[in-house]
Image 1 (cartoon, rainbow, N blue to C red):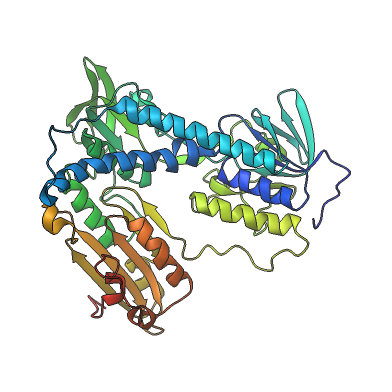
Image 2 (cartoon, rainbow, N blue to C red):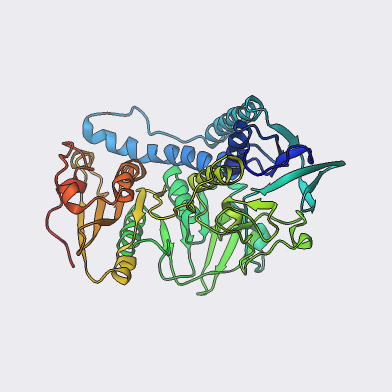
Length: 459
């Protein structure tokens, strides 16, 4: 350990929150010899494991079977009876898997010698934390409590679900409405559409997935609409009322839709309520996020923070990377001499079809560089030449013209996240378009398009 007095306090590190970032920080700090405790009042694994990435991906798998059954006929498979979907089976199998993962997290902490304390922690001062009737002292306190869904107030907003509840509905909603335009909104619109719901997506802006490449957004819009998702842009929900048989949702354009459930996927905010940070003087920005320096120290140096509470990319792998960097800064003998690099972080959106992306969008690249080249391919995947599906795939590379470096890579199509994970290594390494061109493709695959696109689509 680098800068800790191991005798003054009960713990060298006290972590509030046992999500991905908190658990990783606790385990890696303990591996350096630090004495570590973690307090968690809800569930091990945080949002990602319990009400985020993991169950969402499981439900996305389930929804993809709808297309798979239809695609199979073109390959000679005959289903004896029309397939039917049983919501309780998916829901309850998901519950079993999450419980299994919760147990793994508990064993990981125990195996690392970290004490797990059940309860909501409250920071008393710069070095003391209360959990129930227990008071613990710590050289450093790490806030890693993640975010919490936020639903705007409007008449009937209390009738809307958040992403916390949508996985565990008693009954499958035959008519489903999603309010929002971010990751969660487009993913759940695709999921419930694939599972068989009549699905509507309502977004106040002119196009969803703000911040993504414009061509990717437009392509995704068209593909989702072709699959039957009713997309309503430049409109909002005015009110929700309970009616016989469901909910009546009145939109700002005057139309009323009757549905069985409404998901408000309208954003998440740091889950800091009741932690005592404001009384301690921990500075927050205008969005309510904890302000930290490159060592993840807040305005109270002994209080650290990472993950969704600090306002960076709200992605599980980012929280894991932050946890590793934080431990190197505070618990290893030789701290890193540079801050964590947030450039070229890949991400995926598990809508149908999937989106995978890394680096700059075309719009960002045009602002940053004097000249760029854009290579793109929009095609019907080989699989669908027999399946009969009209689903298409988009692949796109963005190149700085002067250096020939590939500064952005984007894909909309089946398994886009899996493909872009590999491409992300090349983009992170700063490889050039010539490097891509010199790479032999794997044939026949869709991914080979990334190394066979030779003629710029535009400059």
